[in-house]
Image (tube, helix red, strand yellow):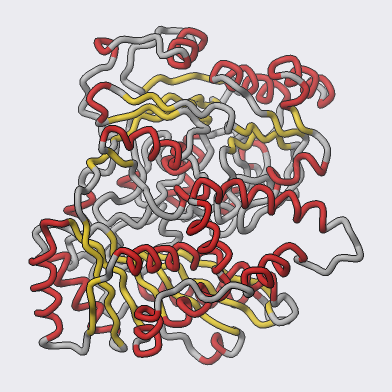
Amino acid sequence: MSHLSLIASLKDLVGARHVLTSERATAPYRKGFREGQGPALAVVKPATLLQQWHILNACVDAGVIIIMQAANTGLTGGSTPTENCDRNTVIINTTRIKDIQVLPAQQQIVAFPGASLFSLEKALAPFGRVPHSVIGSSCIGASIVGGVCNNSGGALVERGPAYTELAIYAQINNDGTVSLINNLDIELGTTPEQILTNLQNRNYTQSDIKTTSKHASDRDYADWVRKTDQDTPARFNADPRRLYQASGCAGKLAVFAVRVDTFAKNELEHTFYLGTNSSSALQAVRKTLLEQATSLPVYAEYLHRDMFELADDYGRDTVLLIKNLGTNWLPKFFNIKRQLDTVCQKLPFLPKNAVDKLVYRLTKLFPSQTPQTLKQYNTQYQHQLILTVKGNAYQHTLMLLEQVQKEYLLDFFQCDEQETKAAYLLRFAAAGAAVQYAKVNHHQVEDILALDIALKRNDTDWFEKLPPSITNKLISKLYYGHFLCHVFHQDYLVKKGEDCEAVKAALLELLEQRGAEYPAEHNVGHHYHAKPALADNYRNLDPTNTLNAGIGGMSKKRDYAE
């Protein structure tokens, strides 16, 4: 099938307005949230599961590379095209297929490929239930299916990576045929048309929902993370424990729906703010809470002093937006900003990164949104921890923290409601603050190098110490993360003129020496090389290399040819 014939077929399937082909129209879908960009023959936006099936088959028949994309919020370029492929690329954007079906008893839901975590939060609120992830990715419109496909982690200590063994997906076989596999454990029929139409229309009864022993979340994680003597990380993207069909497939399967667990909302929570200048003190907090707390904390979010200061300044736009308009405006804001970026880049009289510079200058007209109590702690202590516990765990947690205080220099206080909200807003803003700093100060910054790493559970020397041969090439190194899980996000602002790839290689070599795993939760995308077990999983799922070709530094050619 010729490319013109393919585009004509796609327009017949979904209508011409939902097939984008111009460079300007496709730009927001071809460029990643933080990194990744490449060419695409077309972006096609199906409205139903059956349309998605027909589009997939048309693209396979045409011999193009296919990228399954939802919200395009990935941070490592894994949901966007890449350069230098041997075939053209078509992006199937699923954001129009956003149904969420709450199953009886509300303990599980079925999510279609475009459904967002934010929408799931709203759908579950009347039932007193919450999704797997309720901070971070949920606020920028990330999809439920995308989280499962990338074993995304999150801030909630008990939950672990997004995971399910219950899904409907299409697999492209060795011979180029496409199979639809219903492992949702809901009786929906036998043919792809029956299965997808019945699911779309919720044409099934409670008796069609099978009682199943399959997991719809990582139910073992709460015990797994407590094992602080183990020589492996608690969670990371290449963990073979959690690579199962759609889970961890990274777009190497075309997923139509996932069935996942929901969780009871905590009636009451208390938040402590901890500060120390001793990494050993925080390590003692981690070990004590994981080994002795009767109930695991809800959150334990780490912020280094430098990250705090940068987020307070360069993340102020995010904080102001959420405080005044709510999190539901964030996806709209990022989408509008992305479109403005595309337009401004074509206007030669505007400076580079004009939109980011304008937003930064506007937000500097507003005062800092961080309470003085938190700022005072940041002045005193380089290491800070935002610790939230369930209501019934308050007294025991207080006792454990006081126990640590007897041996280590540790300070803490209980946050009021305003301080709690401000602390988590600041932590959320941290993720984008370094990116904005790099764009506003592009004359001094070569690039931002972002790593997400998982340390071994028994690694007591958790705070990174870099040699001068690396620090001399950096403007700043910024640390934040999910402390009890030993998952850290480490952003490095590389000085202008330095070789970012060389710096990255040196940093990864140090991580290898420490026995750390990377990536921890953002997946390989086009940012990391897939380790052998992960690469083998991708080849088994997609033997012709049709879906998301080139991720993990693998071959971009048909059948993984060199």
